[in-house]
Length: 251
Image (cartoon, rainbow, N blue to C red; front, top):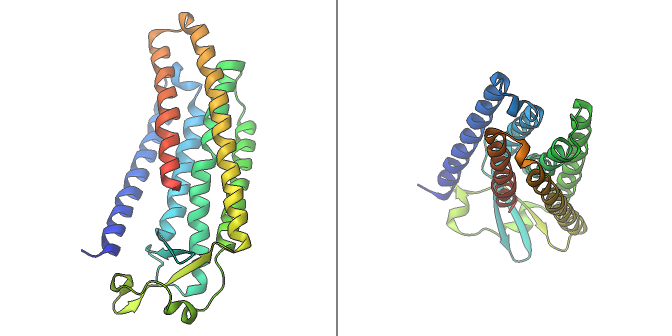
């Protein structure tokens, strides 16, 4: 089995797993009547829908990344990999947008819990919609600069420079790819912008996590054993699993 088949198999497994799990979460939360879960129903629905949307966008490209001679190279291994070279910019923009909305919406979980646990207020649907809109705008911003960073160069110019190994051919023809130079201004803007977004996200997460945990400790004697266990589980899921998963996905 060649590299393209192995990568494709891995992507199919990841996409299928993500789709099945998130649809299952949606079905469960829409039918669950537990009062302990009710306060977080909107949050869980937003998370599941966001992940489904992100999965669909990333499935369009399924990129393979390479770094060579100062170039950041993207090879599409998705269902549209045979599209003309110029359309591959759309594929990478789709992947970047999917990754962005999945990652940038993570702090919304902590903001939501901060309102529910610390402020003890019911979060309005309009508030959630506004937060999601801001996160999506940031994701579009980063996706635009990432896609724009791929310089317009002819395949002929790059043909003799990059990806000359036999593994980068399919049916005797070199794979279609796009490349971005690390000297490209748009690439620098994307790198700086992405770094700022990531730092801001984890700063928000750390600050709100401390406030939430502190509040839960104060109120633990007022909670039922079931509610306290649920809160602990959400802390572990959000802090360790979800943040780590999205961080690894982006890298």
